Image (tube, one colour):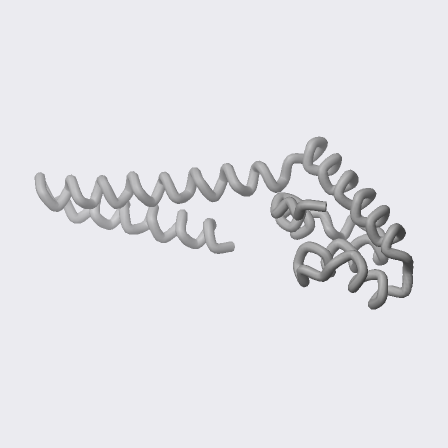
Length: 121
């Protein structure tokens, strides 16, 4: 099985929706980078049982994302906030070369501060 890093990302959003066993197995596989055999030994189930649990968990995570879309929305918001910061920096730069109005500078600083705090939340 090739590891799809998208699943690791989805696990952050929807991992709580999996059974305890599924979450444990998929975390060992994706986050701890253990092989199916290593996981089987650690968890006490067969290698095929591990593979089946991973496949079921992957399907659940993908289905949840398809239905709810939190991960996609999070990426979109992060990208939008970065763009807002870039534009605010551009406003500050233009302001410093043109009229240098303090209110514009302060507004741009507030926009940057808000966008950065939201992006790191």
